[in-house]
Length: 150
Image (cartoon, rainbow, N blue to C red; front, side, top):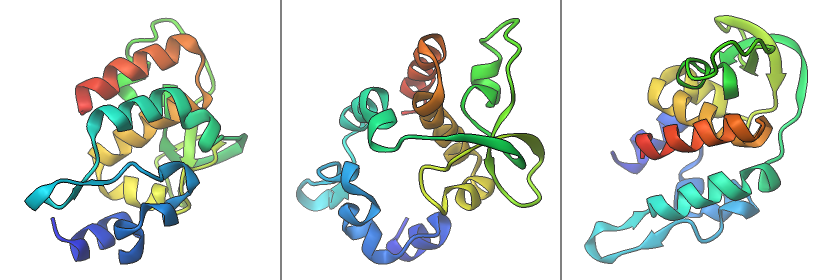
């Protein structure tokens, strides 16, 4: 996928794709250059960052009830493994979203719109939100699921 397609799919500027520092201070150093392949994100480094640091570099707040996309422990793959757990549904706010639940502040202002267009991105963002707002058991499930995604 080229820069133009990536930019439109993720709703970010081309400069943000080439300079990850613009995405936020926590993303410094995640993109490396390797030979002719160009820039790429090392999967192990990204996994470790999300697993252990996401809640500190991108803290989330849970707010009032809104429409949006299911996130964190409300996402289908995590919810299926939490048998008997009755908890509030968490959503990332999206106008005309399919689910009503407690709003979790998105990791990036444009993340909800991008997640609505791409189910795989939605799943990964929901897993990242699990690390941002979840308890130990939920984070362990999310770690397994994220390893399977990557």
